[in-house]
Image (cartoon, rainbow, N blue to C red; front, side, top):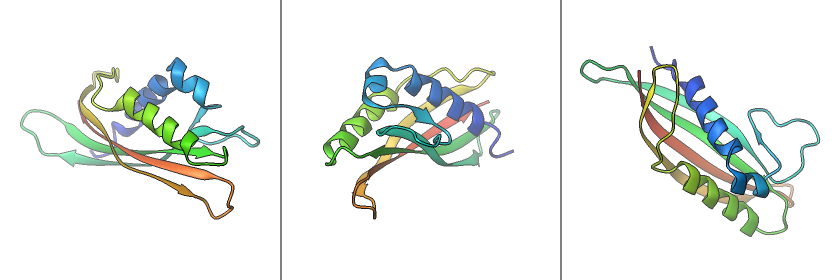
Length: 134
């Protein structure tokens, strides 16, 4: 059943990002839903997708989870620095998922940073891709 590992994956990624002291010094928070009045910069989870993978004797899912950075530092440097830190913390790392799940691999891909239409806010986007085995 596709999608059954997505929530556990996001919870594990949240724990890793929220627990990283260096990243914590760079952002005001890591959110699934940004609270009203949150200070910039911050991270928020975006869209997530899951797809069953045919594997012999295993239940695997390929997962894609978008992480977005929002910054108002006046330039893209702050957003790029946060993106780089998220990459360092997640890319090709060993992360415990719990619940009998195993992270087979994880990769940060498709990174971009753009100015939003308001002319004040920089938005960095990273797609985190992984294979999870049940």
